[in-house]
Length: 270
Image (tube, rainbow, N blue to C red; front, side, top):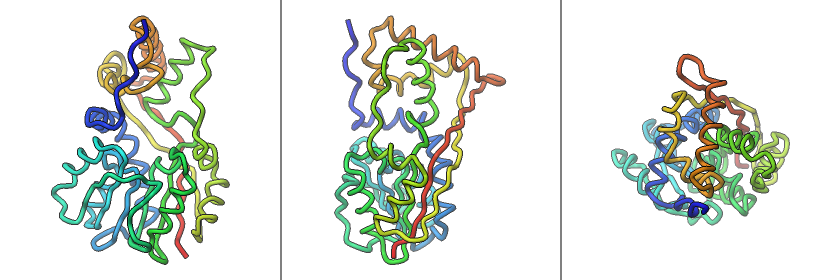
């Protein structure tokens, strides 16, 4: 008998699991975006679209910026609101990144780290990101170079292929297919009204424990991965064994380090 569908990605339990295991790879990407945009500090108005658990919002808030973090998931916003509470100029709000409710020109910098590329109407989201920037404001856009992303998601995909070689991988979103290629990302950003667009491929790193400690740490996150969650107990055991074998091949001194390519684009609003 198959297991029930995975629990909702909208709730606080998923937000906690994501923060515990996935934020560590989003942090380096966010720092790279902040560094390339530059001048994010006191008095700068920053929008973080698809903010998740705050890998970008938190360092921006620490810099003194006025941060508006938005996410469609109430659980993410609840968690991030707690994290941002010490910063009087930082706020988290539930909002659809495809339909921003802000005025034109309201922000000095707008970031979307692995957000726009997975939205159903990604072109509208990118247009909205640019719309709310002031003239001369900076937009930053980042997405994975290849599916399924980085860190534990890559390990899970490899294990699923090993156990179920005939199963097709999930279809990549249209936005990902476009924006994961640097030249296409640059054109999309220019079409949205950005000038001086620069797109680079950078490397993000995820580090975690090897062996059964890896499974113990990732168990909660795995329960939200649809293909894994839909398996019965025997199927999960087989995938867990494949995960351990994959980890063992990569482990050094009891740790596993996974490097993932990320496409990062920066542009300036005319």
